[in-house]
Length: 227
Image 1 (cartoon, helix red, strand yellow):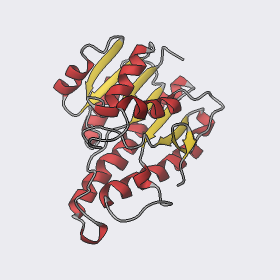
Image 2 (cartoon, one colour; image 1 turned 120 degrees about the horizontal axis):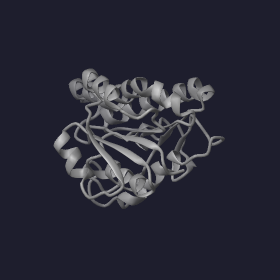
Image 3 (spheres, one colour; image 1 turned 135 degrees about the vertical axis):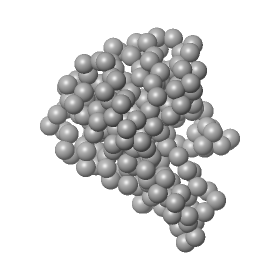
Image 4 (cartoon, one colour; image 1 turned 90 degrees about the horizontal axis):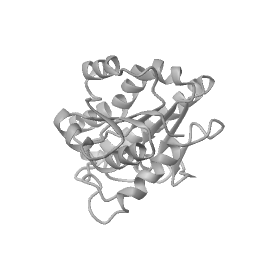
């Protein structure tokens, strides 16, 4: 399935960077994005393959619009909504700073939504689109409890968006799924988690789904996660 045009957000480090590395290694063209262009360029250096570093702040409508206008390819085959902020272990829903919650929603939910809408014409042009929303079990209502309210609520909302988009875009042959990469040893996840390559593999599973594969699901390592 090489030769695709893939957009990866928040790809200057962690899971996003590893996903970009593996896609480029497989022969795909990767638009590696970060809020800071210099960080995107540094991340892209040495990855090999065809990697185009781009500035993109998914929380900024003007940045998203400028990015979409700047895509020179006739299609986008894969969109990986990986950018996320505020794993807020320091607060609870009962004492939350709603400013932090609002910022999390702006990036983790609305950022993914905003970029998906901006790239929909290019995703439709590819006729085999894949949208992968990098979520978390923290957004699963089945296991949700106390803690990380900004992050958990934003990921639960991202899961809801996944279901809606999947139902609406099925006729365009665009598969939309949410993926939990698990607890991964990244700057956000902290030490002790699974290797980054394992978390990336879970994301890539959804990227590589065949046309008759599942859509509107929530998965970790290719297996369903309870909503």
